[in-house]
Length: 601
Image (tube, rainbow, N blue to C red):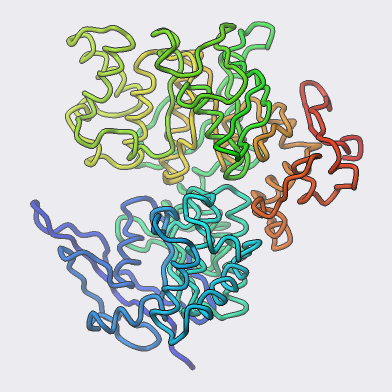
């Protein structure tokens, strides 16, 4: 019997610092056979990435490692020299990380980055390396790879960047591929595409995979076995289907209960929070008031925008009423974040205007009245990039209190404490800097800052995509509590359709800058749907298969035409669909679909 590709026995890791040695991993054992995929799941701080870094020998100098065995293809790797390690990495062991843009050099074309990997380890000339690079891009399902080879990373969407990273990682047909949160920031269709690519690698090249993620659904769909980590130890392991369908450990049960089901909404109840999170109120979230009782909070009028000659938004018309949550979904590059920035005044539209509570506001935030700036705030995807690392949390929150709410120093300090308590953070958090907080705590601090000026509208751009499922549950429950208490309007942008289904009262679907469907959450998820919406829903379903993944995630393949923008990807398209662009047409009470074949759904 051949040895496992990877064999780890009783791995322990500790990090040295001012407070002495802090244990991160305790006695972890795992093995991966040829062509097998093992998922490592757990919350931030559970030790998942430390295990991966130990396997890759990338741990920092202050790390202390002990293991009975740390073997790759039967060879102990803990004592390898630096030169031996460089020969192993990229050749026999490769890695793909969470942020695709950060892993690519912004100053080099994609072709050069893939080619350099090949030429460093194989005796090939530049022409052959370029040919192989194009073939690798085809393997990761990139259309027109010769064109992509000459592009720089900033010219690609997040999904395309991650495919380029995978192409680099598999350039030399490694025996083991380590993926650390590879799809965290990617939409459902691109996630399905990545899963299909991994399946191809395992089937065609017998590649073994260690997939690290807090996304339980991703692990369930793509791995044979799973190991669940808590506080540095594996608390449960087994077949992925068995562990997630019949969890035995209380921690695994709590993680699974934190995930919203595709048919579960805030009106059905609160999301379960693990014992490590602070409990809030219980009960369900009441349905929003009837439309006739509510004012229109946001109205986007004929919004269009382009970056250079690249059109991003096309005549978007949108109305969001006071106190409701409007979910905006669509693939990477569909224009969701651009529309959010236009609403908040961070981006000026090429055409059209934004109305807030019936009044047209200036395109740029700095030209809006103080009250208008106070009324609209934004929570971004990554709190690491929005909280000043040099300032304490108290100062970060008190600044908008003084500038937007006009409070004095003493009143602002008291209000900071109230805001921290409202987002379930201790008063002492005010004296801490962002680096001393967990990701979930930093995002709650960012939410507290957004609510400092008592805004009427909050734009939430992927506010939980980088968070663990249990922390995500806490943040979503918190947002619903704040909305209920203050009648706040939310524009909620997300790629996780389970989260959008749970939060949203109404939903809009964007495809290449065009609204192709709007309706209540129930209407959109129940159908009938625009063909593009169907693909998004299929990519998020538990039954996603290769044929669905092959349809989804190919936005880059679509070519512009004068008719329906989706025609080149649509399984229902006729020749006439390419001749004229369809308008949004009613299909039920407030349900609008932009499709020439609406009557055939």
